[in-house]
Length: 170
Length: 195
Image (cartoon, rainbow over all chains, first blue to last red; front, top):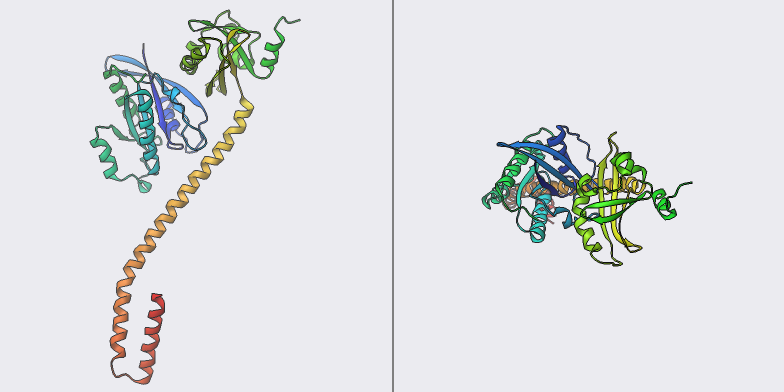
């Protein structure tokens, strides 16, 4: 069966692990538990006529305590960049990580997930900023690991993009 | 008595499993496997002649690219994998780290389960990140209040200026001594507020 590697990237506490858990196990917990190290989960997805195994690399969020190793991204066919819509700075972090990843591995398929869309009253990312990213041709999807909104769609969109592409970032 | 080499037994006691790299993704376990290896691979596989560790652990499969760089020719250098997490069949999370190096002329992979260190490290990082989140929340709260305060000041300044103008006009009118005193006080107070 075809297998593709997806790396979850973004600042700490944006919900990378929660998105993976929601997608793989359909569960969510409100308690923030920091990720230390790398955890790999697997999910089989049907894309069109094809079964596809997604290897989801849940990487610790980069901050002043832990630097991201670019070697973890080796062989990835796609990136799911995650920002927390209630913390504007996490989108800037996504842009910085994206640039660093592309410098190290070249262009790859990606989706930007603006997570925690259930917290609309605390939303900090301006619509202009969001539409600015879309106008660059980026896929920007609002997600909520809590309600499940946009989660399947984000992973499926990335899976479709990866299958359409012949050149994974390796 | 066990015929396990003493160094292998010592490392196993310290939570390491030793593997000799045979090439083409194959590894030969050296000595008795550490308990975490039994948990993750099962006893039979952990004691097999050759194990393809990259097939068992996708994280290691990725790390082997760096490891094989070290194993190209004898060197003092080593490659370290960083921490990754594996789940045992009974649902426990094991923290693992691998080091690729040359030992006694052999290409060696040390896999360690630094669980105690990991279990100490996690709450420290958790506290640090919780504090960062709390700090960020407070900063945003302060920022919001500063904006609100700025708006209030802006909204009030115009009516206050208008009132001062009225006091000035009033003070130019013929007023009774009592009223004159009241207007003077009001004017004085409005000047104080401006400072």
